Image (tube, rainbow, N blue to C red; front, side, top):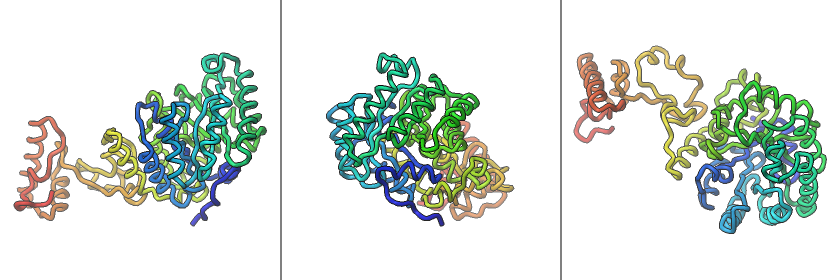
Length: 415
């Protein structure tokens, strides 16, 4: 069993990343707000507590709870302050704009936190620098270095400061690497590389990120932040992992700007269900990442809880946490169920196998559902039930049929 790392504090997170451990920067309360959702203090605390439960013994060292964006206004600041007072696990981080007053206020806001961090956003591309700061990327970097110096001075060693380089997909890779190197040398702990606009494709992304990575000084620690506009964020995050990066900004249910970020549940579950050979292909292992210390059985319940809180129903086709995981509705998988499952959903994620009655039902499906209800059907009864299921499904135009409607259950029989 992998030993749990030491508790958090200034300087600890870069050391953890260099040791090869996985770091979760959970953004549902921050970038998720741009997905037209609002989590109040109690909900944020509950979500971060659930996230900590997933990471288990790794949570205090490897969970960065991005608790909010103070620039929204007084009400957001009040919520952040309450979360900081109540959530005492891992890091608590606020995100600020490139303004000295906002950075000082952010430092003061997180100073009483369990382990406070601030992150400020610095545009890396010419287009984004012009839109955000009305200046060139070089001038933006000079501004950022001055802001960083002021924030670190105000933090007085009590609060960590990170920098986001925004819109790397449209930026000059050499400038991105130079900026990351300079900001790290100046004292920034993590450098977020954000695609911001979500336009990266896997081949181009790998080429871009590999080039940037090769030009980084060894002490630079990258925080990857990829949007899901093209449905590729999970693939981009895994590519980044394969390039040696260990800190990832994702959000539960993928909540975030436009069509969101990479899904926290997908990235965690992809690592929790990966074989050692698959992780070796990414240059790591369960023990090295710290996955052995997680409680991955809490991933699906956490996604389900937030889904209920926000009224965002999960679909059968949602990876890892949807209704189709470990579910069978056709006969062929009964020949050898393991052949039709990409991973051990029960062992890795705690999701039990389920058999559903639908219009695809075979005699094997009917028999399995009947046995689950304590019934042993004759061949004739199985056939009758199967035909009845199909007739009901097509008559209604709805695939699922409630077993209570078609099985010969006793009065009041359990569903």
